[in-house]
Image 1: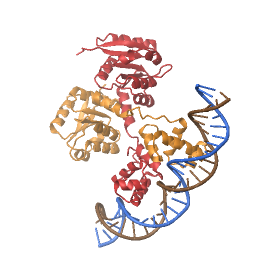
Image 2: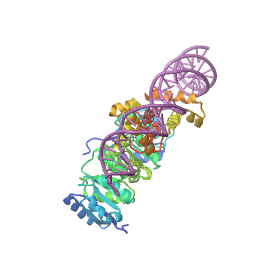
Image 3: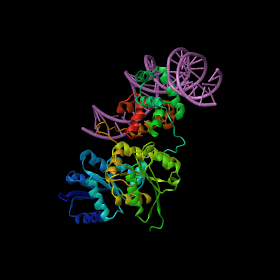
Length: 213
Length: 213
DNA sequence: TCAAACACTGCATAACTATGTCGACTTTAT
DNA sequence: ATAAAGTCGACATAGTTATGCAGTGTTTGA
């Protein structure tokens, strides 16, 4: 079912790498490389990005970085699927790229076949990643608690902690959960004790850090 | 390089499904199914989970759910890699499974070859997921902002927002960043304006929601 | 049945916060 | 060169918060 060509643009400053990709993709009958650039600035002056199905983008680029490039494309041409390619596999790069809106993340050591598979997978709604990157992504999502300082708040306390994060006063919280102002005070004291804090903002911060909110 | 057997346990209540998996895995020379159970309770009475390299676990189980099972194994036998299998591919199930500590997530429609590949990939540090699940995971990580209400805080404001989340008073913040109490007041006013809030806890909450902190 | 733990209510107060207003200096853009 | 925007210092004050102490009623377990 290769009825339509997959239109691809490439942004990569290393000319050998770029030409390597081009020749790999050009030999596939269902791919069509419609743009090839050495920097984001160069790419964004042209219109082929907006017509692309897939953009293959390097992270380390002179001038505007690949991460910034992803944000730009996301803003201006949502719908274009961006696959990042990098020699880096550290958490920060992966995290930044994904948060900026990339839907896939490959390492440059990825072989020709895997590259082609990745592009087809991205077109079919997948998110191509090397297995190691996938594991990293999973680890990034998992709450990184030691388990030692894990805290159990009661349902009532959780309810009130959520209200706290909305900035309500004792009185306002009281009326929204049908409890006296002093009742709210009582629970907030206990929340503070359990979380080892002594202010609303600290409690909210801990709540977020521990995925309670 | 199949020098060592990969030890696998299965937790799945549907007997046909379970026996299907067993027979698939048994035909592979590098796999060894060391335990097979219809529920978490049954599995945890035995010792084979702790000796497993991989646990293949259903999400929908009678009694203790697969999600709870993952948490239990994580607590008691960290190091055991758990792959969830489910007919569900909705965000909540995927998210819960991953947060509980699963390192892979397959749909039950996954074929025999993919199942075997997934297990080998998990052993090599990967995170097996169907392409659709991978996309879901990526989407879960991406901040879901409309872009309209996206806010830019200055470096100074960000610095102070972080201090706010630690519960410091105006005075304390002032001395830690070498600014007068009133200077801190000035910035906090502006943070409130930009974030459309009027309390510290609200500001901190928004800061977390928008990944500013 | 006694104690202990929990879930509140009530009250008091020092400390802190949110917010308005005025003025000064610096940087950036036009 | 003038305006606009951003960063700060000062002062005032109503309103809110953090926290201590003292009760009351209910549930749970020994």
